[in-house]
Image (tube, rainbow, N blue to C red):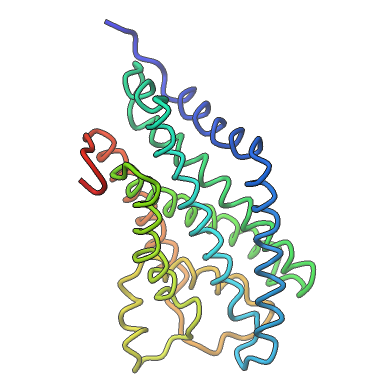
Length: 257
């Protein structure tokens, strides 16, 4: 009987592999650097005359970067299955949860790096969005959001046999998830969108970032409490990691099967 491999080296190795793969692919690195700059230029120019101001859309844009970067990072699961790497990892004498956590952590770090670049652009051009402590806490919250979204991507990618099917699910499921997170519309008690967004866990991540990244402006719209935002986001992250671990023990016979 094979000796069980410790979990920590497995987690570190798989997370490091995701980062090494990312930095070796120049097109991904260039895209990771250009995407925040492109979003910054387009949003700041296009929303300059908006009554809400670009500051309102800033946290939602960070969440969008986290969402799409985290989800795209998990496409590597489908690629690893095709190349046979995933099968070799699954039969290795290591805890399966360590494999899941390593893949999720690697994707989360990639997503967080892009979001921090965008945050740095905001600080450089708009000034410090709150105190230093608030900015640090916002980065911590961004890390938890990235963990949750990468776990969600893992959950979807594991049931996929083709990257085309993965992108199709992303278009019909994940983009509406972002739209209903309060990124584009302020809370309004009488709006059905506000009511529906309360059932979206991503709403609380956006609201938490809005608490921290307020650019010294007074919040003139209702937001869930900061403790509620942290609690829901943390539960979301833990739930996605646990579900990813559970689903990694199942076999796939086709997309979403």
